[in-house]
Amino acid sequence: MARRSIFLVGPMGAGKTTVGRRLAQNLGLEFFDSDEEIERRTGTTIPIIFEIEGEAGFRKREHQVLSELTALSGVVLATGGGAVLLPENRELLRSRGTVVYLRTSVAEQLRRTRSSTHRPLLQADDPEQRLRDLAEMREPLYEAVADIVVESPGRKVGATVKDVLDRLADAHFTTGPG
Ligand SMILES: Nc1ncnc2c1ncn2[C@@H]1O[C@H](COP(=O)(O)OP(=O)(O)O)[C@@H](O)[C@H]1O
Ligand SMILES: O=C(O)C1=C[C@@H](OP(=O)(O)O)[C@@H](O)[C@H](O)C1
Ligand SMILES: [Mg+2]
Image (cartoon, rainbow, N blue to C red):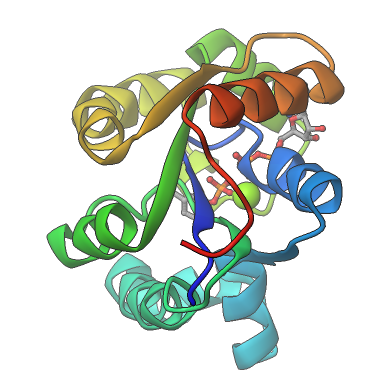
């Protein structure tokens, strides 16, 4: 019998990769991150893929990886912030697992992503405005796919992980068959 998987969605810097990894450890499930999987398969980095193939090329790769990883049962999958853009991806996420939306403020996103250079969409003159524009377009999409919404404010990662575990328990999520 297939075991349900957990898919994390939300904007850049929400903590999908960090929280997802810890959540998987906690639940004894295997962890995947769609961006890491794309980098592993291509042997290069997300910024270089954007540079060579553009965002459209990246989205094609992301869709392929998501279609494979969402087919696995009983895993935790951290997606990238734009995974919800394609309707096909939203359908995969909604139909194949329990979707957790990690929600946070633009101010917190900025703090958490300030020192990183591996997010091409934030290499903008005004990253704060970029994050606001992305949020306006994407928040309804995160809401549309989410089974559970967990706030990820400026607290310790462990507190966010605990909140996700509590909310999964409330939603009767089990790692058993079913
Ligand atoms: N409460 C929190 N929950 C999740 N991540 C946090 C939290 N506080 C700080 N962070 C930090 O935010 C940074 C970005 O997290 P990351 O997992 O890469 O986000 P995403 O994959 O959603 O873009 C990491 O360095 C992480 O440690
Ligand atoms: O929001 C986006 O469109 C993106 C988010 C990134 O993932 P994180 O949300 O894990 O940073 C990564 O997939 C790529 O840089 C594009
Ligand atoms: Mg990530």
